[in-house]
Amino acid sequence: MRLVIAALLATVAVSCAFPALAHDDPWSISASARLRIESIDGQFRPAPAPEHDTMVSLRTEIAAQYNAGHLRFVAELWDARAWGQDVRSSANTSEVNALELVQANVQVPLAGKSVLTLGRYTLDLGNRRMVARQRFRNTTNAFTGAYLALDGGAGRKLDLMFALPHQRLPDDVDGIRSDRVKWDRENFDVMFFGAHGTLPDVLGGTLLPYAFGLIERDGARLATANRRIGTVGARHFVKAMRGEWDHDLEGAVQFGKARRSSSAADRTDLDVFAWFVHAELGHTLSGGWTPRIAVLFDAASGDGGKAGKYTRFDTLYSARRFEFGPNGLYGPFRRSNIVSPSLRLEVAPSKRTDAFVAWRSAWAENRRDQFAATGVRNATNTSGSLGAHQIESRVRHWIVPGLLQIDAGAALLLKRGLLRDATNAPVSGNTRYGYVDLTLTL
Image (cartoon, rainbow, N blue to C red):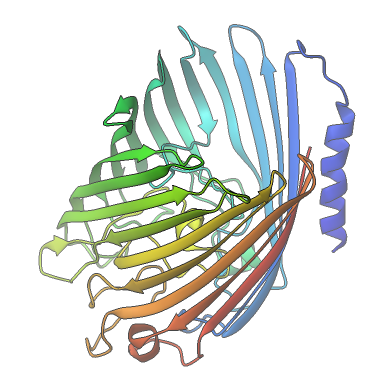
């Protein structure tokens, strides 16, 4: 706990070291620290994941930017650590990545608001269902390469990227449990590239077409499924507004070649065809608390194990908390082998407080494949395809606006046939999960 207090004090010290930068000062400094405690009971993952687990985590972020006029230099340090988890914990590099420079780049302003970024960077694209900088998760996706943000004015944009995704290290159990500091690795064994457009005023909303490519190969220190896949999709949305209807529609298909596993013994290239869809319809009332009621539907293909075919949708470098519930020690759902309707109620009692409650049911799209992110597989095909029902809620409140926020959430996973009766499903009852975190932003 002394390490936690020291990290929080260090974050405060960074801010105090630059108490009042002038408006025209070329330096920009920011920092934040988030302390979280979370606990799970009634594990849904197969052994060896423990039935009960509790973890304390701390994520500290320090970012600096120097504006030289014709160039901007950006650096950002993340320190993500965790303590107290079980020796068999599911916590991995999604929760622990100690002392990592996730951004170190130079930005070149171009015509208008266009910018070319070279170096290490993080990135959000669209609604973050394909490429995302993580917010809830304790560690983030990061890339090394080039990112060109072209601004055509009037809301028209084109984002182009070529990147080497970072492999978060250390990735061994001992290194993760000891919060060992080890520089993340990137090389040409994994290459990610693509384009993402923004076109306003299309059919009464905004259209976001996109295309991404991922090429990987086994390296001396990296085992892969040798994915060589393309993802093509589009999103159309209308923003939520008081007294109005809104919607969010997105779909994508994947194609190419991949292997069914990253095992060195698996050398069979399979034809890939996979898909994903999201549909959401919401209405915001104009009364107090501005309640929004939304109906959602998510589905993504699974893999049936057919010879020469691979059909599980790959989630690329996305985020999922905003739709599927908290991850960390929890996180049973993702955009892979799932068919899932949901009902959601959101409220905002004040500018300082927001909350929601949601119900979600989930089936496996393909009974023979691993169900979503659970690791449970219906090998005998006798437990049905219904996995679970989930009840989830969250409340956030700014204790001190813009400075200190508390976030608390809980989820109840009511297991059904697949998560109760599948061959490798744990005998642990329904899953209960909760977390509380406190974020200081400077």
